[in-house]
Image (cartoon, rainbow, N blue to C red; front, side, top):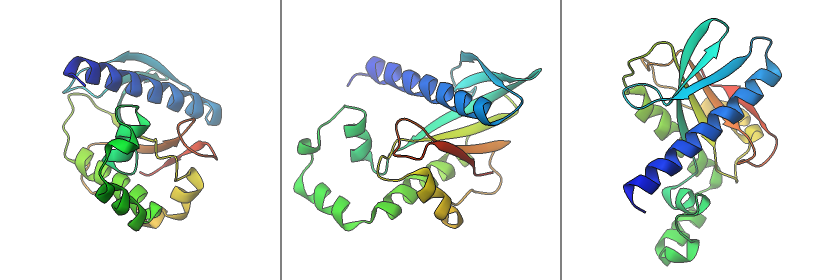
Length: 171
């Protein structure tokens, strides 16, 4: 996949993640969020409006493993991976793969700097083996680093996830 195709795929994923988040947020809250535009670093991925205030929304996706992400995004087929990768996936429990992926994202994003405040982090679950119920049951194992740059951190489970759909605030 060339850089242009990758960037287009990334922008599309971010855009649709934010739209799904806005729909769920607006369904469950009185004050509604509205999409303004997509941005480039060092700005957050998107700008939105909540009342009379603009908020940045940085978007990340969790898929379990890199191989599962590649197949879920349609960039590779599982048959393209060596047997060693398949054995590793079978040995590591789903909960560990899901939580490790989420915690890695949270740790990585905690070190980011943005030229906009406030910024929220939205992590969209694309790992179809782990649901919102599973994340809620495992909330004590979700590690939100101290000193991160985000006003709020959200986990969204939408049509890319197994049911139930919804979101939970991590911070």
